[in-house]
Length: 182
Image (cartoon, rainbow, N blue to C red; front, side, top):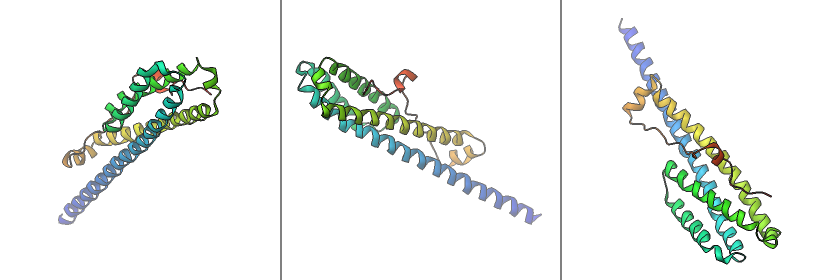
């Protein structure tokens, strides 16, 4: 009888260790995938000022848009929460779309090799942001599911694991990259 009890206790201990390690792995995957999203957002934030400077020479009267994008870039670098960052990044994407639309009025700028290169880099970055965001949200989904599944939720509660936030946009239309065409 004592052997059975020891065997059951050993099995419970092994299960607890495995569940804890899986929770740690999934939490670290969420953190690592958020880092990937952040790298792509910073890449976009580095490209936007270059694009703004290039366009500024042609469209000096659009100073409010240039200032707004610079302010959003600065605020975005300070955001830590994926939900707050998502809201801010929607505004950045909208501003970039307006900036690209503004270029349509300047054929010589549109034909500029520097502009074409920046536009290509920005389009690539927007695609990378979308991929990184999808991977991050998948990692969050797996982690949050593990937190809510029995019996793993017992370990998660005992060690105070918290659900991760999704990085999302309002709707599918906004999930697409801003209007960057080549």
